[in-house]
Image 1 (tube, rainbow, N blue to C red):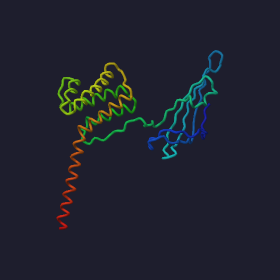
Image 2: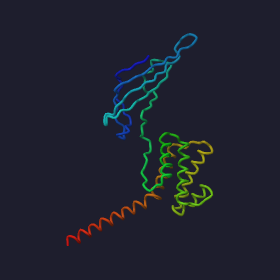
Image 3: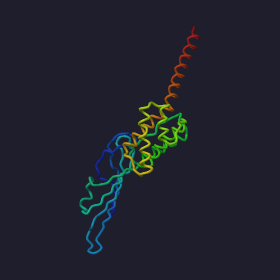
Image 4: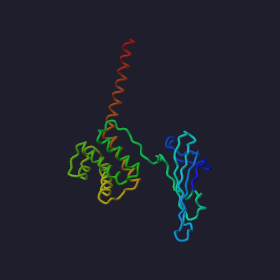
Length: 235
């Protein structure tokens, strides 16, 4: 059975990518199709699959999304039980995604690795994300001319630019990358998020902090000079 209609589906709270919170989404239309599967011998119904789509609109910002749902059940009477449905949203909800930060002093190669790392994380490619995080740390070591035969030695030698307690914990990034590369072991999403946040803190400290401090000093000096010049002219 195929059906297209103005849906009677109730409003539903879904994370809105624009409002950045869960908002009520009303359903404007629905299309679904049932796929019954019968026994080849006696013709009895084995199970029914239902695939459907709903157009929903945020009651706040009026942004639309496509809600895709799927269910398979041996009892066709249970197909309307939405608690058993699998839902997918288009575009994907970005509630748990990491938004890219802007690092103005970051070189293009490091910037590209950073953005590819976020892309892998946001698309749930955890093994690829772990490898990218390791590559980002290696790129930082290379850019800062940190000596060492391998990443382990390079991390140990980062004490020239970072406190020792921070350096000792950077080995966790190396371990995550090693497990992904050699054991094909995918780290947890929580560990990857923490590793990315750690890398962002490194990028901010090593590339942005001095730039921002110098920019603030120059801005204050310029404003004082303008005030002095204005005072001289008025006198």
